Length: 215
Picture (cartoon, rainbow, N blue to C red):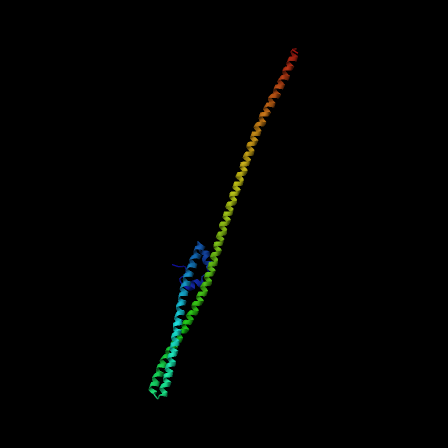
């Protein structure tokens, strides 16, 4: 079952209100547009049929008017020839056709109203369809912007992650160099400590020798 059950449902539809209640606004809008386009095809087809009927009826009107004029001329001819009864028959035929012409003219008036109504409905629907397509375009543009922003944010996070990874790697290298330098510094410190210790022992040994009178 479609969204709209009749043409007036489309005309009176508040597109924004329908979309606000829809779980998937874009899907709903696409369905609405499809129904509008289908209805527009139907309206144009009906209008074309009415126009074709109008052309046919106008042709019949022209032919009937010509036939009425012919019977009028026949009636005149019959009077001129003194054939009153024949003239009366001609006028009777003319009267029948005149009544028929009146019906044809009524049909043309009704047909014209139908065509005008169809044109108005088509214009109204085309306007509604244009609005719906404009809203669909806005929704698609919003989605495209959202995807672009999400992509940009993802790229930003990736760049930040890579930056932090680079910084961590740099810090690790610095720590490694510090450890190496610290190890080299500790080795040098040990050598000087041993040297200083040996010197102290030699001094103490000399003092002991002096006291022992060995020097």
